[in-house]
Image (cartoon, rainbow over all chains, first blue to last red):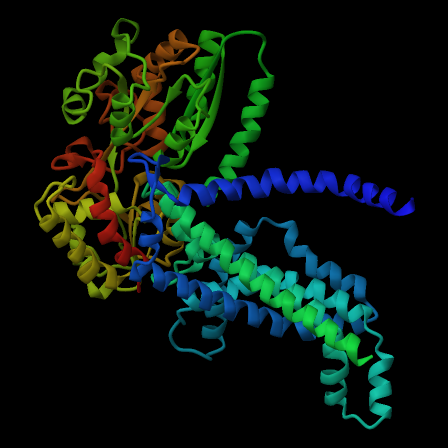
Length: 286
Length: 345
């Protein structure tokens, strides 16, 4: 008798969220998938005639190059985020001033991301702060080209999404019982060995979350490549906007969105499966 | 991206102004971001005892998509460019203009009507402004003998300090014009030749195709030469800073635009809409708009007498400029050639 009632409560509790997701995520996604298989309208929109044109266009060598570039940029930015976030999150978790540091991590979100991107333009430009300081210190003779290239895109992407990597990692580190490291060392492990073999596996779920949280928004980035990118740093997100706002090719925009979603989905599933397998093997071990 | 900010502000203003009504008539306008001085709107509201609510768009495509999706219900006046005006006329989306209600149409010069081949008799559209994108040169940064033509973008001495607009029709149109063709050419050979000119001679010297943030960087001295609309740099630079700027429209001609005022077929306030269009073209009011953007009186010659500023270019400079027209199916040919230029290194 108790079990079914509990189930009902579960459904009741999940219903609002479920409805929300269906309405505002699943339905639009369905529309996008449908549009991607239709003929483009002459003046935007679609004609209700099935067509694979959009996917044929996606396979255009230029577009494939942009897709690969997007993938490459995302991987680089995500891994850099992770490399910076791991020690940071560890330090915050170990610090006595946790609240202060977490607060500092979140502060940038108080300002619109666009304003922060414009701030970076001011920092990185030829006449910008960074170049001026380096010139004044005599470290460089000529201003460096720090902006309007792939380097700037990755740098600003890392800056934008670093908190998304730090926060889940912090949670994982915070939950970790650091006396286990001491125990491992007592049992003869080196410091590095204890960290890598005892601590790292325990925070793996945090790493997974951090990867997913940074990789997905980075992969769909649009404003960063538009504003600090140069000639060769267009990403898939920019193509989608161009197809809707300039070229009037909604099916192609939809097809790119579908690909973006699929690649993200595959990425998430792979990472999640890796995490689950890890959990299982741990259960077996214990 | 100041556009997004102004959109937010605009939304807030819209809310405010729509609350302030006292039961009188309300005119709904759908206009470009930053394209009409508030002063003129307020004056109209006072004179006709009505409210004006404005929504903003930043591209014709955005505006058109919204109208097509049914989001245009309730708008009285919309400001499409020439190509989209012709599309909207073709699709029967517009109400006819009653000339008797707009005596100020007399101030619109014949040249504008001749250029507006899609509606020379102003049956469905009234030109708001005819102008063109040009080139702004920071004279303190450019070599003294820079070329005052589109070929300035081929000048290697300025490599890495120039930007072209992120707008295919503008850039390709200017390249076509440089080669002596129409900027609306549908000849594959001509369009290909233009694409080669952009790809081989201009692109290697520019930092990027930019329609968002270049004006700020130009004002700061990061870029020495930018392809731009006059209002872009006016918005970012003081009168003093503008003294070192040479803004010109190349004599070889280029792409020109006409933005029109049209009344939608289902507009709820057609009479007020006509009154508004007439009010805008009242030379005294029109001069306020021109002064705000340092525009020349191309589209309302009588306004010149009331202007207080010197425009950045003159109506005569537009000689040889051709309005960007709707290319229909042929747009795809341009798109294909543009993709590698825009997206590849």
